[in-house]
Length: 70
Image (cartoon, rainbow, N blue to C red; front, side, top):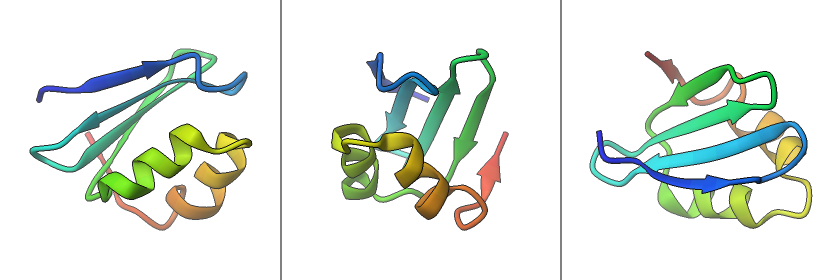
């Protein structure tokens, strides 16, 4: 996987990563746990990164609706 990382997203989300080839998004939380989700379209990843409240958008759109992968 070749991930592109964005750091310091918010207080709850420390980093977001995205792999264009596999359409996998990685979310690193402030407690250093990492969760991977796929398939995630790039516009959705970009909207979370640029959102004013990325944690809220993550919980509404990603968590529980897009499959988590390991």
